[in-house]
Amino acid sequence: MHRADRQGFVLVAVIGILSLIAALTGSALLALRSSVESVALADEEVALSGLAHAGMSLTAYRLLLEQKPAETLSGQSLPLPGGRFVASIRDEAGLVDLNGSKPELLASVYQASGASGMSPDTFVARLVAWRDEAKGQEEAGKGGSERGGKRPASGRPLRSLDEAASILGLSPRDVRALAHFVTVYNPDGKVNVLSASRAVLEALPGIARPTLEDILARRRNPAPGDVAALKSSLGALGDGIKTEPGPAYRVGITARGRTARTKSVSAVIASGNAELAPFHILEWSE
Image (cartoon, rainbow, N blue to C red; front, side, top):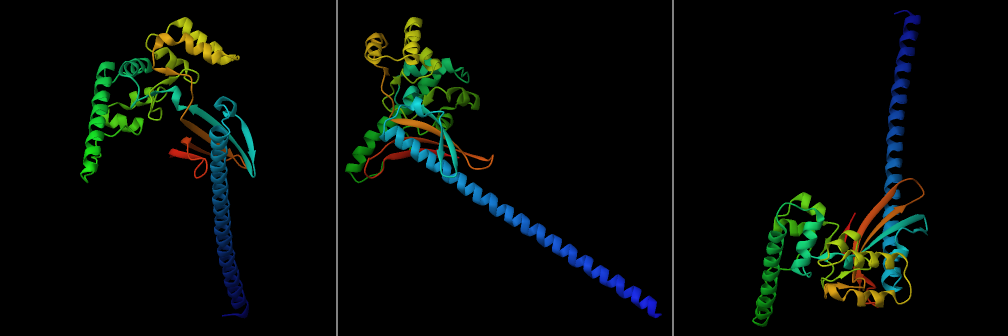
């Protein structure tokens, strides 16, 4: 092989090796960049999660301990170190309770919701049968506990609308329709007319149009003595209503950090022991 040929071969080999090194270096840099970006995203997710949890705690404190009205807290954009959060609050007392409300109210709200998988009478009959079983199991459980036995798991109060769907045979469409009308977190079963939606108010058996409009007007422009006057005017509706909020609230928190990313969480909260636990979380979802 001529000397020139050997030099050309060596040059090609060196170029090939340099190209390989460049490719490996580029791949390493891409992998490093991807790792850095992944770590940054993970850090941002942790920060957003912290903001959302802090927003939930602050909202619960102001709502349950400071007793701020839900309507004054809902929709506010409030600052926190590292970002901001917005809360949405729904008083669960403004809904009809699957475990505690009267059968005639449940039948009325089923029809008003637009649910159609079964008749209102069938819905109520199945629900009442389950509630009666729950009551019977509770009484049997008390007797059993005295004898050292255990309370059966079946027949207990419903824990969610999804569980009610499984037990009562509700269709997915019925569940979506009922979601804005019913709850399992209003144990006395009475509807708070000061926080209930117009649709829920319209479903109250025996409510007259003038009474409905009077409730809505007083809520929009409250004045001293309105609650007392409202209570006296609602006597005809019986004991299925109230004007007190709580004990539970559904709170949604949307947190935003220093970028456009957001984190949303939802919980049902209720008052706890002020010293040991200011509030309890009854349900949590992300």
